[in-house]
Length: 328
Figure 1 (cartoon, rainbow, N blue to C red):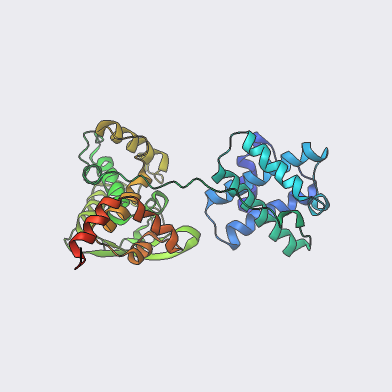
Figure 2: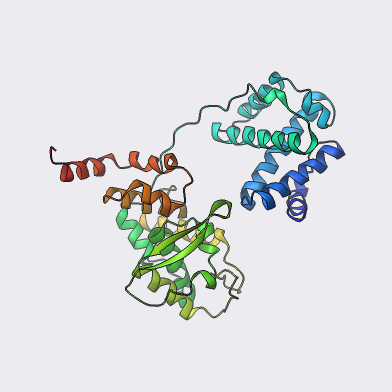
């Protein structure tokens, strides 16, 4: 239970779950199953663990005692609805409430499989409707300025400036998540040398799923320049992008750099590193790109996740229709 123990230790300041010893042990085993068995990301495991801890804390007050496995089996639908209502009263969004409910249901399936205990109270409970939120991509010209490292807030140290340019080039030029870009290793980048030809890299995405992503010449050159200037030589299985002291680059530093650049360019707070990934998808789609291909490039498990980009730039899509349809 290495990862589960590490998670519990990292949350020691907020306390362990208000649960009986057996339930607490099953909770730790569940976290390990999520991390090792289902290979969910550390952030997802941490969020699910936090959701269950909040549920157990609620049951401590609601039931007047530390909940155990038998208490979960005897819950009524009204008990679950009371928890969700308490979360709404705390100002939690519908999206976060849905995730909490998903975590509880996932845990319920785990204890049914491992302990033979079924939480029937969950059967009639449905997640609240989520407010539809469209991606907010960085405008094309600003995205190019950021990816080219021409915002006027470059680092004085040449190799760090080159590193930042390479990271943002990967986010916009390849549509990578920040975690995917910062996890790239020399093993994944062996073919990237200065060149105008398109190369490919294997990216490990959510759930450990691997996809092949093309890398255009400008991004190839940016990464190659960073690696040429970088004073550190990571091992073949270590992240390529390093911090000032040689450790793996912290994503918070990338987010901080993005905040400086959006300030220089006058962009809204929605202009985050992830917004460059949105820009990648939106700009390819607006240029006539195939939605199914964009799904593969982004590593989306479902096409419905990718389809949200069709609603971002209706004007561009209408113009493409007018330019290509014979009856337009």
